[in-house]
Image (tube, rainbow, N blue to C red; front, side, top):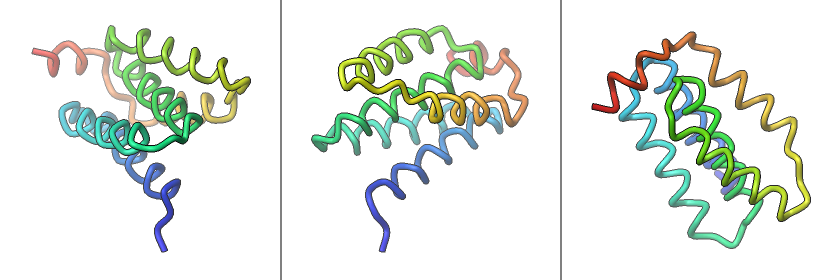
Length: 110
């Protein structure tokens, strides 16, 4: 049986994978799907975690909007009294795993 958290993790993994493959539009769609899924729930921790993942993925490709997403994630986590250092480390490493070039953010944004 596929649980909500397993589905969330699979969608986040696909978002990171697309970004690593320099396929930003597909990565954006994966993260948008993850956001829509968690935002339709009352799971505030998952809502914050997905934003943290998305922010780190955007940061990994040098996208300017990463800081806004990360600020939102940290604000939400702070309101819950959660630091999420483990998740933050995992997402930072996932964002760097593919060696995606920062030029990807600029070229795909047009």
